[in-house]
Length: 256
Image (cartoon, rainbow, N blue to C red; front, side):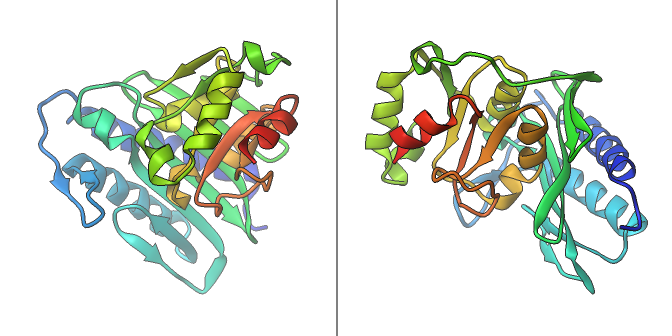
């Protein structure tokens, strides 16, 4: 590997911090979104953020491939190394002036995400991790919750209507009945809450690869799990689940 994971992680942190500062220039300004073909919103802040991230990757790692939400896939000769970019995860929150949106960047090498970070500009919170290097929240090590009883657990989600859209209402009803508290406004912030031990479960029944690019190493290095609802640690499941290893077997049983 030409660069060490610590070098990659430093690049990730510096890059999404810079992109996040761009988004702050448009936050809580009454910005008006455009509507994409999938009926989701996008703003100039999304586009400028992704342009900055892409330009930095292209400058420092010109052989690497890039998968971004707003500008698609840029394949290269070194397609075994890919970057996943979400310039604003939680654009709906961003538009409404809710400070829980994030800039996400993950690095995949030979099919495995090995480094990534999520930066929450309006809160100035950064969580970053690389395989074997630990998970770091605002510069200090962080771990998942030690809660070992599902009835004491807090579960986060983004949009309750997504469970119906994905035909997962019954699974959601079972999780809701089994847990102590259910909190919305999730998006990337829900995964941050799980990785920092402030919530026990985060569920997304609908998810794209750029929505979860950095989360496998973040949750793994925090002592937890990120993957699909069947127990596969992947970003390609079109769904997301994060929890502790203690609660994972019971969570998977209820979801199934």
